[in-house]
Every structure is written in C-alpha cells, then in structure tokens.
Image 1 (tube, rainbow, N blue to C red):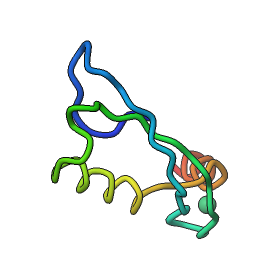
Image 2 (tube, rainbow, N blue to C red):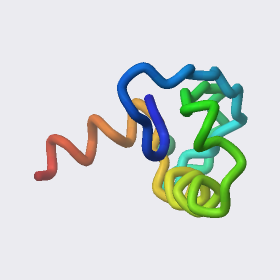
Image 3 (tube, rainbow, N blue to C red):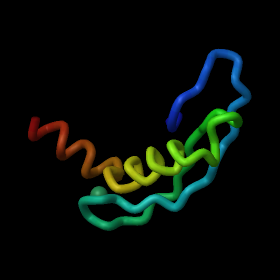
Image 4 (cartoon, rainbow, N blue to C red):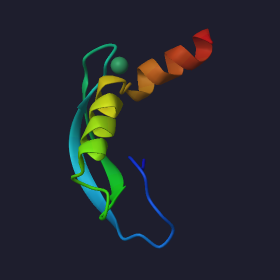
Length: 68
Ligand SMILES: [Zn+2]
C-alpha cells in the first residue's frame, strides 16, 4: 500500500503502522510505503490520517465487498 504522491524513480520507504479497523476496532499491524520525498509533508500527514480513519481489516473489507 502506497500512501500519497510519488513520482517514478522516487526512493520509497517502508513505514510500519499499528492500524485499527475503523469498523470492528481490531488492531492490525501493517505497513505502508511512501516516497521519501513526500513523507513527512503536511499533505502526507493528512492522507495518512484519512487512510487510518478509513482502514478496514481483511474481514470487514470482505464483508463490505459482499454487501456491495
Ligand atoms: Zn474489522
């Protein structure tokens, strides 16, 4: 999973996160990737926040997919 903007050829860094499912509240250890250039910018922080707010664990994601 890549968060935020990245250009071709950008150096990507791996970031480990403790994610929490926004539906059932289950903790899911996970990781994302981000462009080294973009990481730490205000926009990146916002996108990361949004990603975390909307994060679903595998089970809830499957449930949602079946519903749709
Ligand atoms: Zn869940």
